[in-house]
Amino acid sequence: MTQALFEIDRLSGGYGSGLVVRDVSLAVGRGEAVCLLGRNGVGKSTLVKLACGVLRPAGGTVTIAGREITGRPPSDNLGAGLTYCPQERVVFDDLTVAENLTLMRDNRRLDAFDRFFEVFPRLSERRRQHAGTLSGGEKKLLSFVRGLAEGANMVVIDEPTEGVQFENVVRMADLIQSHKQAGMSFLVVEQNLTLVERVADRIVIMDHGDVVHSGAAADMARDEILSYLTV
Image (cartoon, rainbow, N blue to C red):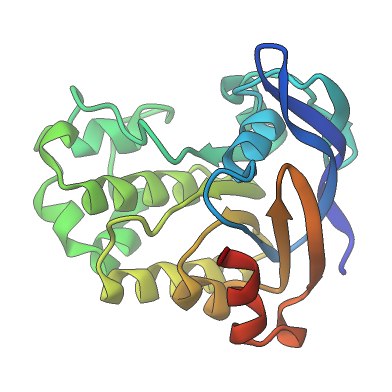
């Protein structure tokens, strides 16, 4: 692995007094994409919520570029170089597409998104439309584009391809690859092997709140990956 940018060390937590994630550790190198896989309900989304400050950990630490951010809210972490794209409530329904994209920016100009509009012209066509009127897949694209454009060094994305058409999944993968080459790092919770096989440098697999496998993506065949994702 290249030099670690984002590190989760023995992180534990869940909801209320119940632990969903237990002493999980993983790291993401600079310019690397780590894909976090596992069956539904094994703790993947809980882990990234704990890591990104949506939930408060019961134990463990999270660091980015050597700076501890454990338990800090997502709004504070952008300044530290971390962007989080959640699985649910991915956009602000009452705001337009353009307002969603520029909400955290210093101005409302859309020039910075021209490249993304070329890749996903549907978003450009709907820039003045309220995000709540978009399809589920279009909302995912909007969240994905906003996350990549925020300028953070580290992007955590939870189920980005859910409801997204195949051709757009491929385009998402191409964008992740190009941003990796520019030095951006990714932790991606995903079930879609089309995306995983196109972007993953390493694969981490969870089951029952623990990591059960971690290794180079090039060393794992599709059948081996699938064996972890089925009962």
